[in-house]
Amino acid sequence: MPMTHWTLILAQVVHVASALGLAIIGFNALVLSGIYLLRRRFPAPQKPTQPHAWPSVTVQLPLYNERYVVERLIEAVAQLDYPREALHIQILDDSTDQTSVIVNRLVEHYQDQGLNISHVQREIRTGYKAGALRAGLALIDSAFIAVFDADFVPPADFLKATIPHFADPRIGMVQARWAHLNALSSWFTRAQSLALDAHFVVEQTARNRSGLLMNFSGAAGVWRRTCIEDSGGWQADTLSEDIDLSYRAQLRDWACLYLPEVSAPAELPPTAMAFKTQQARWATGTIQCLRKLGPDILRADLRLWQKVQAFLHLSGYLVHPLLILLLLTTLPLMLSDTLTGLPLAGLSLATLGPLLQVVIGQMTLYEDRGERLLVLPAYMMMGLGIALSNTLAVLRGFSNQQFAFERTPKFRSDDQQDGLSSTHYRQSLNAVSLLEAILFAYAAISAWVAWTSVPAALPFMLLYAAGFGTISALSLWQSLKVAHYRGKQLPFAPASKN
Image: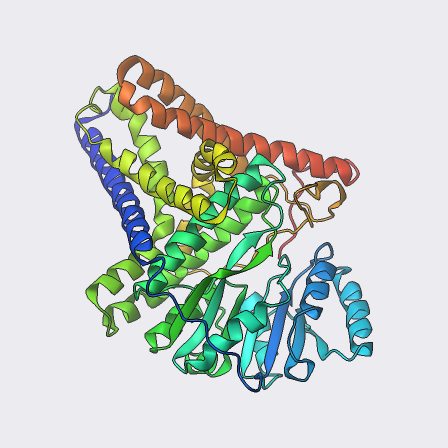
């Protein structure tokens, strides 16, 4: 049926608005890249001298059903090079599976060796991770709190590399860079590493060294206890308690410090379903923070540039609904022969900015950056392929509902194996995977129409088709693989609520 006049106008308006929004996001990525190149060496934080007496530190390890990685985590934290009389390890264990048995055994072992380590268990998982951190904080009196998620392996010198920076009384939080345990295990984890390296090398450094608001990344960071308390403590009304607290702290005039030279490796999700779960939680939580903190940012005594960048930061996941809207409107506009007069340059700009950040990140960190950048097309497909999942997550973030904290399954994968053959943590396929397959077909049809009528749109439609096709196929194949190793259980069984 031909499009009506007003429907056509609406499609054009949505298409242009989506392209403009993507262009703004892409241009800001270019801006942050420029800031990074100008500021990467100045003003760099000066390396402080070691204190005469090391302050008390509690390392908090929030856990929920982490049987495959918990032993690796605790063993690494037990090896931290820090005075034993000033170090406390607090395992915040909300697990409902064998994880708690493993933790009990390890706690007893290290207590026998004289390590101050405690195992805290709650009857009800109120507030999820934020609730666990808040409950654990009430049990201790340490001056500083380090936080690591279950999939991290902190280096032995982590505390001695971060704690001295708190000699500046204005600093409330120090964040380290995330490195990767399994970046080279597959093209999928390689592509993820490109995205995270771009964030931690370019975006975090650019924001921190130019006086913009930055975020705590949820792990591999250290907090001053008085900063946590002065800023309102850990709150569970968003799924991004890390962004929430770090923004509230900076709005209370606490300074945050980012140390790109200090890193802690963690596991990248080896499966598409686990990756989508992680990204969706981040998307929902970040938008919730935008809704919660937006009015405070507007009223804050900040420069206009700081406010603009804060809003762009917290609204970054809007890129995904914009991508979906652009895809959905392109086909009808091509069929009605009205696409050629609309702007496509914004799409090129939206693509160029993130790609530049990726290249800078790899050039900065690795000698084999040429080999690592070979998966750049996979990075682009991955970003497009999760657009639907993240769009739904963004919509959840704008709603007034509270959502469960759905953990990202950990598999103890590394560069030699993916961990799927032994996992008991099943990620079931859902309706989103089916919709991704439908969008793959829609994008493929759009690519065929573009090839015959609007060649300028063809590269973008092909990328859409490749992205949705890859993610939907990978979700199905990996779910079947996990189900096979778990006794050939069907991957469509309902997932357990976390």
